[in-house]
Image (spheres, one colour):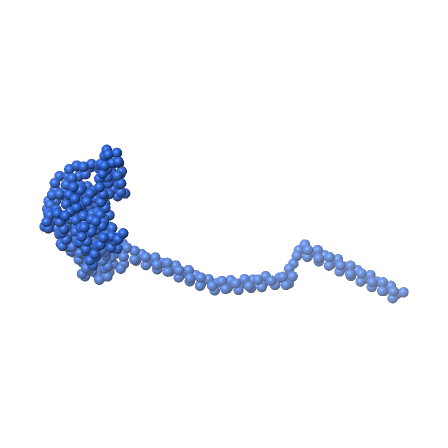
Length: 407
């Protein structure tokens, strides 16, 4: 019995221990739920993360100087470029570099001396670069860096610049004018007397073409390239109608009772010649330019010009009138306008000038160069509307034979 009792006590003891264990376990679980603790494995992770973070930071620290070096290099390059741009930026300082004169005057084909004042030990005369604003306007010959000779070949206002490698520069203006006199030599002469009594425009145009090295006769120009038309009676028999002389030559140069024409008709004929011969030349209606402008632009360049005036400088007189029909797009007249013809109209070739006279190849003469006093000719020239025609493109190097146009 005692043994059984002992066993019962043992059972009770075990049950009590188990009960206490359960109670403790429950308490532990409750505490863990209320106050959670990380496991040992979880607790290790922050250390590893911290270690990884340290490693990453270390790498970043190692890379940062390289990035800084790149940025510094870029900054240095920008600074250098900025410094370079400052060094090469153009600027002026007349106390260091300047022309002796701000403006020089010159005549076409004459030379003018240009001189620099250099007051800086940092500027080497041999390093100074000279430039002309229009390279085709003349020739610059630099002597010793601080002086140059400029020969101008056309009229106008031009700038000369002298600059040093640092960007320091000086400028001056050169104003060129036509010489006091100039004559174009060897302009072929043709007379209208006899066969071409009304042909002053065609004969003058043929002289101009011959000068530019086109082998063409007056007959070929008139019959092949000049647009001619006639006046006629209107259908109702009441009026005289026809083209204006800016649209066609009125009549024919072979007839003394014919009238004539103005620049657009001659320009059209000349350009037909150039088209037929595939030429580089072009005819230009320069109407409106003064005689002095024509001289500055063409005559001093040895380029003769057709000009309209009156025969022997006689007074212009309005005579025939008619109603315009068939006006061209180049005419200042419209169909239905009344046109009044100016008698004594005349065309001749301007070939030179001096202080008092203009010089011409006048088709009314018999071969001698004709001269007219400037003011008298200017008056007639203006009364006829400042009409003129020039040829651009220069004299041909080889002669071109002009035939009748192909149909």
